Length: 219
Image (cartoon, rainbow, N blue to C red; front, side, top):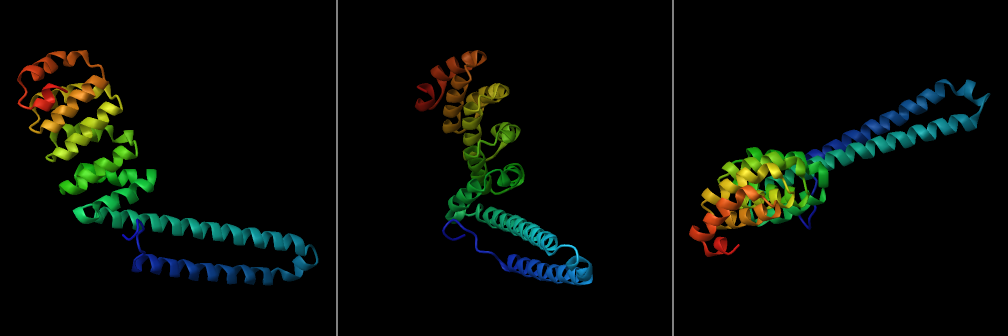
């Protein structure tokens, strides 16, 4: 990834070449078709024949552009996901995926749920949060409960509060009471406040008096 853009690989150029060949063959096929019906067309309307030819060419060009766009997005997502695994390139890769918008959400959700690399899951969670991908709510709930990465749990606790997910209250209470990371516990307090979770009052009172972290006690 260079300057936020992914340089097309051999596969992309190969597909472009194939599509260009198919386009050329289609043009020859169109010309041949018009040659076959030429005699009947010229006695009726050159204008009609030209309109049909132009619209067919425009449609083919639009289809080709869509195919190229799809392949380029696919390549960009693939390369960016690979870069998510490394600290040196993860930030730029995350920015690239966020710029791609909804196209990247399903793949980012898969990374958050299944990838074994902490750096990749952390950046996927960050990107999903920036994209306001509320369809990932269930994955954030799962991550808050069981993800091994403190940063992933932190992102989960933060977004569940920002999105006002009432179903997250029990998980946030559990995080406040049991999570080993003080930043996650601190964020759980903030999110429970955003949710106006009255059922969390006993846990909040307990944290105020006995949590090992000063930051959590004064949150």
